[in-house]
Image 1 (tube, rainbow, N blue to C red):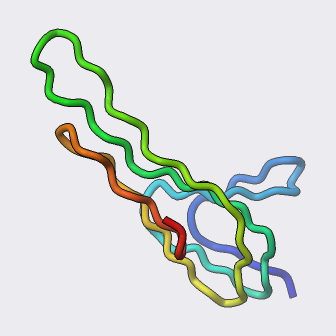
Image 2: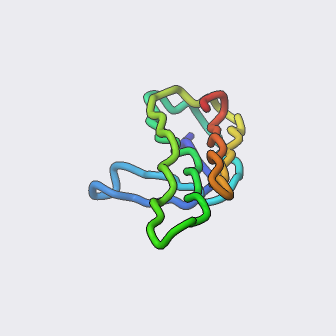
Length: 102
């Protein structure tokens, strides 16, 4: 039985040996048919927004935080993916979450 992964958008690279799944909005990543080991992930939080200008010079907002790591994914489990929104009006953005990683 082969492992099937659904959710997000699949991008296959390295002559078909690596699949990357990306999420641009919140969703679910589901694993069926087996266990995946050493799954690598990269999470990027929403960045902050620039302040309202008081002059003709304004700096941009800051980037969101980044978290990387690896984990095993179990058979027939759905993993929640939450995409953190960017900040508004000179505020910080929100965290992105993958399963228990935030």
